[in-house]
Length: 198
Ligand code: ATP
Image (cartoon, rainbow, N blue to C red; front, side):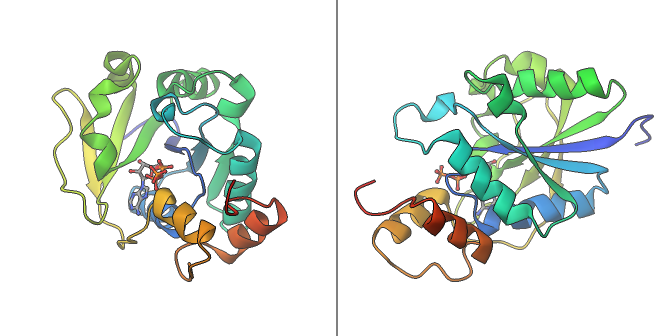
């Protein structure tokens, strides 16, 4: 497909904490689709996770910044933190398009997210604005997006980890080798995150 503007990837998440699976996905999609930019967008208020405690946004942003410091093609984005309030992806995409009206926006989602994408805020508007880049997630059956979404599947090396499993391993002092970048571990220790009894 030809497009007059830049191709911009948006990879949104809670990133509590960011892990090696996230980094692998962001790199793989950027390379496979030859994106001009890949923004890793930290949710300010992940409204779909209101039933669970979530670390403060600035801590999660610091972890993402640490993870991406040596990844020149990936940008930690504060756009949802700076906007404040509940993090609706449709607002984020509109803001990106306001800055770059001719951009093609590629929204990266794991297989677990695709199944429920029609529960997202204003999903009818969102699906008119983006192309989904869908990646496999170990242990999650891959389903097609609901009707009406443009989508492309991207292969990437599977990393069987979730932030939930990682938090639990960190809280109980289990090894997390290979599951999270070293720079993120250092930042977690500095900020005293995910210690037992948090
Ligand atoms: P939690 O366990 O707290 O729900 P998570 O590991 O799913 O967290 P999120 O920040 O909620 O992480 O996920 C952001 C995005 O990353 C989602 O699109 C999700 O599908 C994708 N994702 C997360 N982990 C992986 C993984 N291991 N492989 C592929 N995609 C992943």
